[in-house]
Image (cartoon, rainbow, N blue to C red; front, side):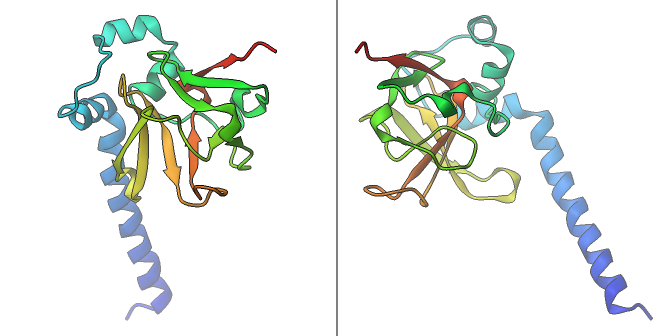
Length: 172
C-alpha cells in the first residue's frame, strides 16, 4: 500500500506536470497568442511586426507586443515623482497623470486611475490565474494589469510596466 505522503507527493507532481505542460506551449507561442487575442480588435495605430521591432527596444517589444513583464523594481519610473504625464511607449498616447501615481510597494509603477479613454481591459487567463490585463486603447500595447486592492478614491491599482511607458514632465 502507499502512504498518504506518497499519494500527496505523486498528486502534487502530476499537478505540477499538468501546469507546466499547459504553460510551456503558451510561452513558446506568445506572439501567436497576442495576435489571436487582438484579432477581433481594431486599433487606431497599427504597424507591421518588423516596424514595431524597429520602433521599440527588444525589452519594450517583449512587453508591449508579446505581453511580457519587466522585473520588479527595475523601472526608473518607480522613482519618478515630478508632475507630468505617463504615455504609451508604442504610440505616445497619454495614459496616466502623475497625480494618480502612488507607491504600491510591488516594484512596478502604480496608479489609481488612468486618464479618460486612455486604456482598455480584457480578461487574462494566463498562467492559471484570472486577471484584468490593461492595454493602450490606441495601439493595443500591453501595459500591465489592474487589481482591486488600490487606494481611494477608486480602490484600483493599475500595476504598469515602466518600459511600456514614457514620462513627460510639466515645465515648472
